Length: 249
Image (cartoon, rainbow, N blue to C red; front, side):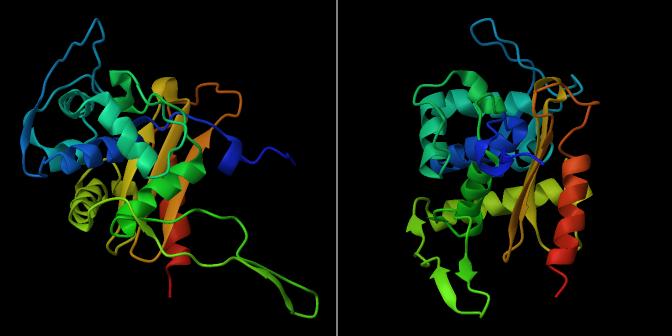
């Protein structure tokens, strides 16, 4: 009904689904999933980010913090490694429009991305650190079945140490088994992350099995707030229903 292709043209805030890149940059700088950080009030240059629900958990491992999507820990990690390092990491994984010198709000996914970019970025974790260029058309055949066009497969370009990619997959698995993404559980190993932008304008679930990666975005084209839809609800449910069928065999 519309020529507007949301996969490649909708530039939306990823919210907490962007935390995969925050934590990825931190892991690359030597942080481990078992390291402890404080989930407590934080203030930076007059900015006072809070957790969804406004509570605080105190001392938590980074694995727990990502699973529970604790905002203050993501902000702390961003300030530790530097917002520029987080931006560089995200761009290296395929999120082309992230600015070179962002503010600390990058910790909470304040900069716009497309659903295709999010899928491409997460695929680096799934691929063990290799980045592949996304494409839309696999092949075109004539009515007789003759091949007219086939996309040439390209080898992944290494952009992340496989060890760090593995650590990120382990942390993202916990999101589904014991965190905000339990609604996406398909009963087999999978990893992913929920995301909700300010005022419920965008809700995301980006996740993958070893075989298939799927990014789900829900929102209004005009940016109107939704009825408090979060990434762990409708997007996780869409992802679970789709992946259950897609992975059946």
